[in-house]
Image (cartoon, rainbow, N blue to C red; front, side):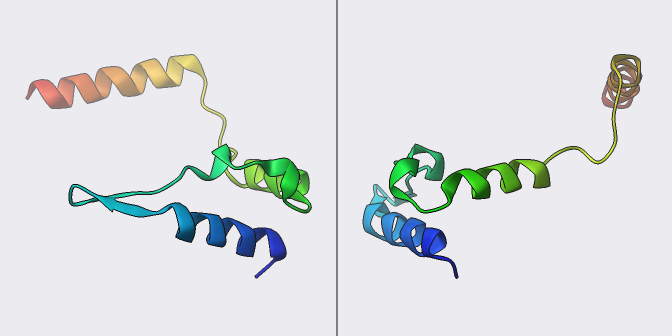
Length: 74
């Protein structure tokens, strides 16, 4: 595990709390990224991993929406 990962895990462990029967967990993107090593490289890599695999144009989305609407109406 990298130093950045360990730091995030420590922050998460410290700030996670059980409140009214629900766990309250901090959002990782609200962390002070400047204090973490190599955070910009990790962020760029993570953004490239969630990029869509296939381009979908607007007409295709409209077609999918109308097909879904017909299925929901049945």
